[in-house]
Image (cartoon, rainbow, N blue to C red; front, side):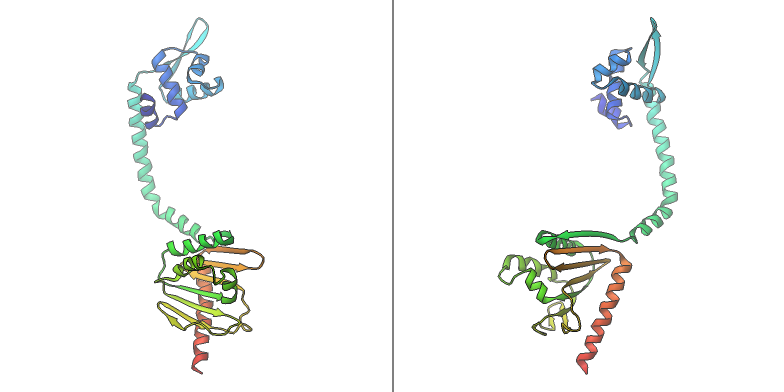
Length: 253
């Protein structure tokens, strides 16, 4: 019980036990303290030194031997008051430096964060990231041939999980396929435009959502990558928008 109180005022678990032993049993040698706490003698000495610096333990000599005794519990009160004052000062300094900390945080946010995935479980993890990320709309380049190869038509359970990816999410999709433009141009919140395979020999998918870009491809193995970086996402999104508008203008011709 007392050890828990000691820990709450800033003592480590072992330090709290050392202080509790000295407080309960009176003057003790380092060896006696180490045995009662169940730690090596050098470790006990390190904790005793820390407690001494905090004013909670002092040493005395008796019969040519060094013993350690606990100081008055009043010193604990003074230690708590000191910690509170230091915490108040630290809190004030922290508030003053929040703008600078935010600058550092934002700078770190601009550094690309990259995660790699493999196999169907990896694909499901990428889909989960898509579903749990916050964004208003998304764009995707996709090879439907590779999509069907990755998820065979008879794998209904897995295909349903994929379908949920697009549910209620405004999507613009540019797709390619050996079958030609076989998908509807608009379906629910999803818009699609077809690009001939010979002009866009792509064999995977690139999905842009929020500040993230997800890339998936399948040769021998299904592999994917998610890059989190706003500048990279905006660059890929700009390329998508250019292609989308180009395909739209070609349809009007």
